[in-house]
Length: 40
Image 1 (tube, rainbow, N blue to C red):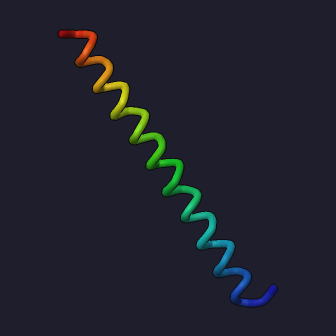
Image 2: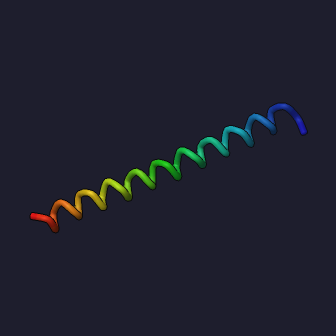
Image 3: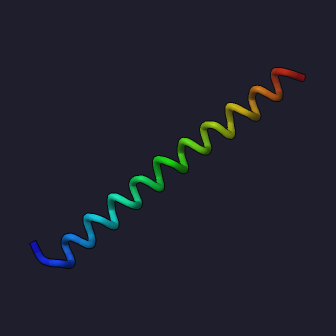
């Protein structure tokens, strides 16, 4: 394994984590919006 390969793997893992967190946050946001619409 070259150093570059290791860094690339780490980078991809981080990006993956961020994407998951973003989609989770988006889902929560939509749930909150939907909930407030239903509550009115």
